[in-house]
Figure 1 (cartoon, rainbow over the protein chains, first blue to last red):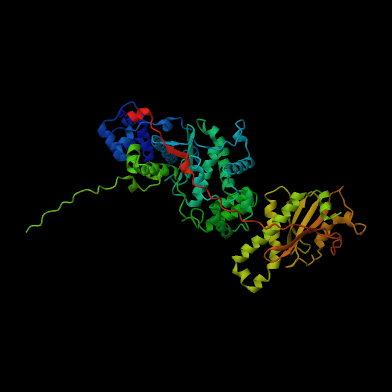
Figure 2 (cartoon, rainbow over the protein chains, first blue to last red; figure 1 turned 120 degrees about the vertical axis):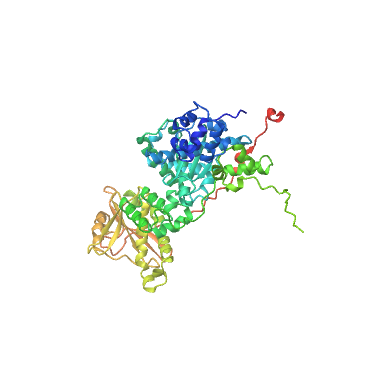
Length: 381
Length: 210
């Protein structure tokens, strides 16, 4: 295979590092215009510049030469972000998160060189003739109930949401997303990918995964649009939140255990249901158990206790993604490819691989050689 | 003719009775949970002696909570005549119900109250002639009924009665509700089936030659 510089890789690496074209240009001492030309493919950088770019952007040199696989080169749907704000910082963060998704698809391409994955089994629960945007929140509630039934779940709390979704051959990746960006999802061809913040607590990350799963189930057709307008965004985001709430906290069984809407009582339920107190309060409002005034009061109480960002019980270890990790372990155990060899073959940044494979960075390095003969100076007599 | 058939004529259905039968034990369970976690109510005698009052509050709360998730009943917080006591009114069509605690064994009567006398105007047609059997009023569909419950940590009795207009007796025997203790939902254990989603790729002949 020819080693050709891939312009889009430069853009991906830059987005991952949250650097602008001029910042990278300054760091490697080339003009902004030149760098832009490298990114558009009008010019190919010299090898010494590629090395400099790799060093500045924290990726292996081979990353820039990595060709695009089947999945990564298939058409990517729109990415479901949680915000449509267009501040400069947010655009950078969104580009970075989008690059994470691209690399997740790239990693899947690498694994598919050795492993056959089942096609993603996304439950098709919406009649194709139905306009999803016209569905009211009660219909979304029913959709979530149907999804639970389809997946063979009863009415109780779900022990592991990430595992449940990865069992459907849908990769879920935990990555360090910036504050305020809790998760995103997109389709590459027929396979959806979900990326959620690795910094979120156990309870919040479960809600994030369920939220993105809601997008995957309900908004595939919308995802094929070129861009979400504000109006559509204002419909799909509440739909996804409602789906997450109903998926994690089915009305009947959840309410049968809500004896009181005090924060302390809800905290007891948090342990069992794996849902944050804040999300339970929102669910109680959605179900009409509390009104807007009570909701506001409870939010004030949350704030007074400083629970808006960190709640008691948030030190519980978050769920792990397993799909890619298990594939890597599978290859290693079958003697096909060790994990460091897989890391080398993928040519992807170590930091990303560590997140995608749920393996600490040192686990991606080859073991130190054991058969090194030790020399030492002869002692003078 | 019995309480159930009268209420059915006035518009209530099995769903309504089931609603009440589920809410009563849920209220008791809620109170039990609170008491277990509140030493002031579980270990402190002056507190534990007041649980009789709280049982009815708990049942009313459970009724209201449940009404919020179904379209079966409207609820309203109402004052007594002296405005020193609040209670919950459940309403479905022209049928109004109020909840009452009847003691640990469920054999204590419900006290007469002026404000309930007003509600009892709905039963005028039912008991007008003071006969043994009340006249049903399917034309107007109006009735006032009392949800009666009793017990300590779990309800031992749950029933619906239609009081006489003077609130001192019940002509018809109460309609006994089956008490359904709510079961805590079990955690849905997700089985790890990731291994089933992947298999080793068979090398193509070209790969093998290479």
